[in-house]
Length: 267
Image 1: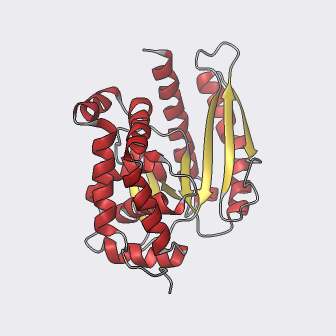
Image 2: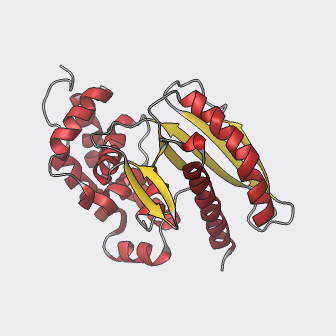
């Protein structure tokens, strides 16, 4: 096994420990697992994820502090025992650290004799717009609160338009899980755009950029395929057109589901 694969395996084992710990302790009550790791862990996605995301309806700063204490008390000693790695859990202090809607915990692990080098796993506490009730999924006897499949894929579509900087992994996740769309996703997405104050002109602008600069976006998706997908899945995608195939499929979903009116979503 290559050093890259060894590191990926250890990262995923630590991520599973984090998710299980959060799901099994009081600070994790009603924290809903979302994002790429949710897809990887609960839906067997072929795309690996370096971080862990949670939806939380309350004060994210308070929850950040609760999780920091949990990780310091339970996670760091567990990782030291299992992997011989020292670690640190800190509140993110970089750009946008004061954003009241998103709080991040930076987890870092290292070891003098470790072949993996430094491991960093951000844990993000955020909020997405949900149309459905909480869902409970189980794995190895642990109950994991999460959002519905429809809310998950809709959050990925909204992220394409709501992020300041596009993350091409979102387009790949749309390609992988487009079958999770709800029959009424078009109506649901329109309502979510209103709640998030995503304007129709902004939707049109990002959509036009995806088309006008398709070569760039296809290359960026190809890099995600090369670095974040399991090797066999990546080979299948490259054989079928790679980043361009993913981009076109994601555009088809977006063009089918997103609002197309000419006015602001909340006008």
